[in-house]
Length: 235
Image 1 (cartoon, rainbow, N blue to C red):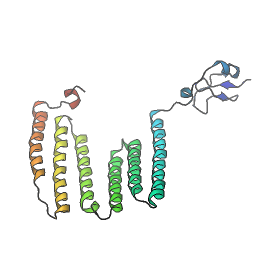
Image 2: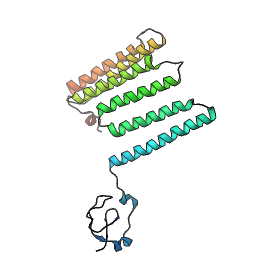
Image 3: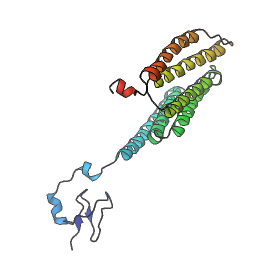
Image 4: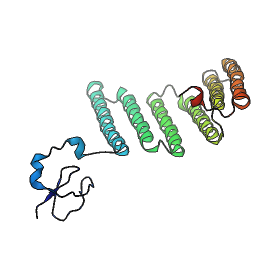
């Protein structure tokens, strides 16, 4: 009895093997002598699904990121005789790769994605502040602004998921969250640079956004109740 060839990927199978150990295809009992008459292409030998392709891309990005960090550190050591600018580039490259990792493996798990994004952002900001000690802006400025931003994002996502109808009310919610973030930005920037919060331009911005958001809410719940944004904009 002759060995057979997997008709799916072209691997020669031993006698008695019913499924291919490489691709999982069933043995169609193609004689080995017919192998020379059959053409197989690399794309047919290894077929990856979307999850496998994403993992391969993630692994490749990790190799590229690690190589970039190593090269920058070595160049900095050779030219500057120490670690200076390479610390910033290494932090940003590593942070970008962690962002990619989170979106690759946790994009459908918001309870894990949002905290991961927040922690990674805070870590990047803390390291950059550490490498530039005269500034000391992380705790008084960057930390509260970043936390407030991600808290508002979490609140918006929760309210969107609980909304029965998703239309102009979603836009109104987003604009209100942005106006709140603008006020927070002015408060903490004033405290950092002047030691006293004096709300001025953010109040003007919020006063312009709130009436617009109210109009969107009115349109959604009074005139176009239940109208989806995709259908309205023909998306």
